[in-house]
Image (cartoon, rainbow, N blue to C red):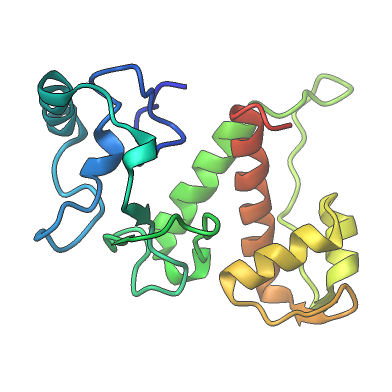
Length: 199
């Protein structure tokens, strides 16, 4: 799958047979440059990737000895932290705690998640329906939230672990003010899974 505009280059979303993309994942979080994962414009990194291709051909995954680990939720600012290169592959891709971001970035992440989901289904009578945002209770059980959002308790518990909401079982109570962040993370994961053909 070719790299889409605005995506962070990874081995999952870069075409290993495209000279502009094959080496891009290796150019994320360049050593010696502090700050965001991509301190240089992606178009310039594509030029560097093409030069690497021309010099040595496509990357060899069998010879790989270092892997990129994106910033974790809970890092000072996961959208702007560089991440780390380590001698082992990451166990899984951590989520981003929306509440750790500024309001403007939270709104942008929600907008992109809704955009990935596609247009909403039309109302039955053909008229647009407007509804107030849901009013979350002060606390809510994991299993009830999962049912309300159309997901399993296991999926909700997974998101809770990613964004630092203390919950151990489906019967655990979680703060209502974290429900929107959990809902948004579930939407993002579902939209990305659909886009990548997983579901």
